[in-house]
Length: 321
Image 1 (tube, rainbow, N blue to C red):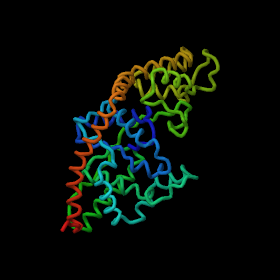
Image 2: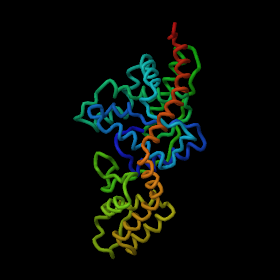
Image 3: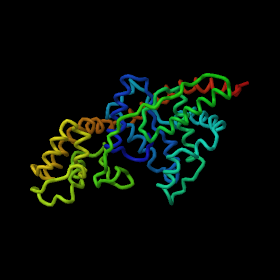
Image 4: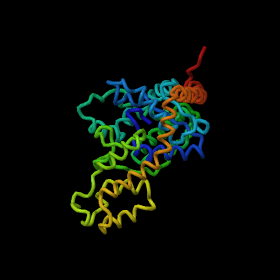
């Protein structure tokens, strides 16, 4: 996960909840990828360390257990950088140029100077992140599948060039992302300032829910509503999937007004996030403990990545004399 800002509820439901579940059944490596953050945010790094700590606290508060997974910061495991360098030697330029998200982000971030070597090569770094641990299962959304395919191609190319068999071909594990809009109906994003953060206080959550865009055609409480165009309805679907049909029926039948509907939604979100908020407040008082978790995770990660890199160096005849 890229430390580009505070995590919001879209990150929580779309990624963190899945991570908590995966650690029960898989040997998981969860990485805060600060080098990846630099590919688009290299000009201003003043908040980078704060963002890393904030994500780590959000993860731990949400149920990520360092006794069940390896949790670390990318730049603390230098083996990622060396493997990235070695893979870049064998990666055809056309492979990274054709990645759909590369051209898409160039368009989205038009006006910013991100046409850099690091940004072009970030799929190679992502492959190194995967291959360093011989990962065979990668939880991703559909938009990340091209990156997994490049990693698979790199595995095949490496094995062909050096006549070896070191890495499994990673498979994408598609996760069910709850696509939450921002409170204004647009994509939930730091750029729009329309997020509800994991770290928000109960009062901040209530204020933001009260600002959610509702059906513009519903002027009075007695007017039938159209929940499918209503931001709160999307949150009901994500937080109370067993209830949202009732919410939709009440809205269409003008049985409940928008103010009351949003108040009830705020109560639901606050109740769901309250244990996480309490744990987060406790961890904020012990930041050194959180940093220790990241350092211990990096130590474990270096052991695994170091063994992998030794095999890679031997296959490429890069040996210590």
